[in-house]
Length: 404
Image 1 (cartoon, one colour):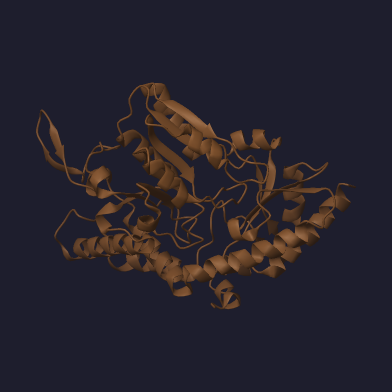
Image 2: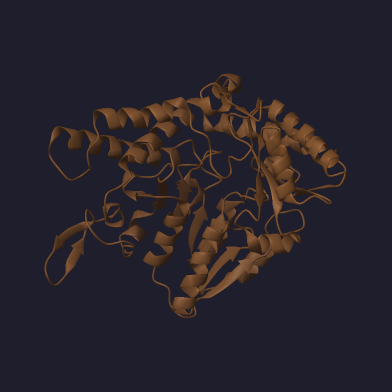
């Protein structure tokens, strides 16, 4: 098992004090902190081989291109795919939009998504349906925070063109059975896209084992910088898709009358890539692989189990999502009766504790929960039980300040 106490020392931001208190960062579902090794990797790139990739034949460009493509190979190995199935994008949102706009939807096609999705896996499909006449079906959640799989099976039909589902809910923490969902969808010939923004950073992902056609995730939630993300797509599907963006790098030939495009993945990477971000993403994957994704998952399960136990003892607290840490990621959303989430977050901030408050980009789910907004604590490799204890103590102060 990795030494998670030592790991925390790699995150220099966590050494600072907030309002004179030890920083307790519990907002990793929004963005992760970055270890010094990743920051150094990007710094070294800029200081030693910075040049545009796949453009020139001089030394720096060739070295930069080699580093960029090496990171693509690291991503492919990380999720067990081939390099030519990995497209670099800005983030999960762009990845999903790329797939949505690259596929050919027709009137009467059906797209199935779920009520627990982040807006980035609902809004693009709403727009596609408005443009094409396709129909959007949304699977409900059960009272325990899991998907209503019976309803999902009822929704499936020969009209189902695509199923878009989150791997892990950013609000409920629910880990969806994506392999089973994919198996059911494939019975009807449907494509499957998985939003892995909360999945890939926290557990071992094998897209071949899952059987999905697309898997999207962001670098900034996976210890890497902002502005770099990934769309995995099966090669035979990517080759049939239209590009989402047009311009330089992605072309084979341009005349005054028309253009032809390169094969995947280059055809989907128009313009200057975030090549430094891609190199840093490769360094982040190296860092996580050294720890072992199985260890990352076990660490978060232990923290989640501990936090659920401690938080459940607080009077008038409502915790959303599964109570079983085996089917839950390191995300705990809650509300305290009589306390607005923003007030809770502000008081916790005075104690050096950073959490998320608001609708968490999941407004349809908020409506289902009967809450305008929530408080959300989310864990990662640099958190420990002391952070959970600080949160519990902070919430007791919240109740005192608000006289609850």
